[in-house]
Length: 256
Ligand SMILES: Nc1ncnc2c1ncn2[C@@H]1O[C@H](COP(=O)(O)OP(=O)(O)OP(=O)(O)O)[C@@H](O)[C@H]1O
Ligand SMILES: [Mg+2]
Image (cartoon, rainbow, N blue to C red):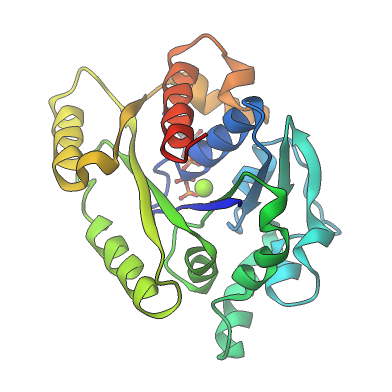
């Protein structure tokens, strides 16, 4: 049974896409069959894996508006064991389309994944920094959510809103939704602030806060621009080491 994990946080730039790519590629390297779904109109996960997007690219837009089945847009083996359902700039229009749809506009992705779920060990969804209908489709399709939180001022600000949204989705669309885990990103060992944020997250999320902590690391920032995962770009660096720890924790937690 494929496990569907949505990487979510409505706050922008906290490391969602980097974490989604690293998890997908790392688990792929560990011989898990992975589908990475890019649900963000900024298509950073798509370009972050060297996929070129142009006006003709079939994307999650075509799926969400009901024009294509997800099988028709999936790109196979983009990285080792990683298939990708790409995004494109068109996806920005999907929120409005879904809003006008009014009925059944929050479970389109869920319906699409039923057919292909068992072709994969893990399906990772990179969600956009919003709580709109595209995001709702991600949350209602998911088994669990993985929340990256950046170690900075007001890090927890917004997390309570996210948790309320998750509770609401649980009550209405997806009763089985749970928290996969919380990962602290862009951690700076030297600052008191980073350490305070980490302590607060451990206190709030207990065993759902990962032991792995992702450092602020220039190699991680470079890797997305290169269209590579951190494991390809700088396999022996601190960034790769921390993301391997996360990969291992997620796999162990899921009995892999
Ligand atoms: N650990 C890190 N150290 C340094 N830079 C990082 C780290 N993680 C991510 N970055 C960089 O920070 C920026 C934001 O990261 P990313 O795109 O993963 O965040 P996001 O939450 O997906 O953003 P958005 O909300 O816009 O989708 C990117 O330029 C990325 O390369
Ligand atoms: Mg992103």
